[in-house]
Length: 65
Image (tube, rainbow, N blue to C red; front, side, top):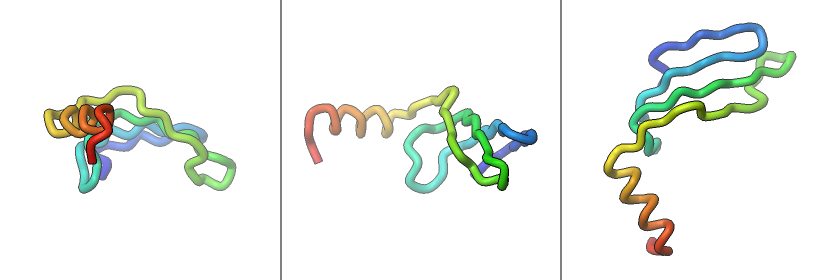
């Protein structure tokens, strides 16, 4: 769910707060669009990880389920 979206002809910036199934609390994402207006590539520019996200990353690194 985007809180604010600034779109250009070929790129767009999205400020996103945590949604269902998303771990980081807040993310800034830059999207690149193709000629048809479809998202071709997206890059996370910035994210804030919450306590739950950090805990899940540690589990994955240790090989736990």
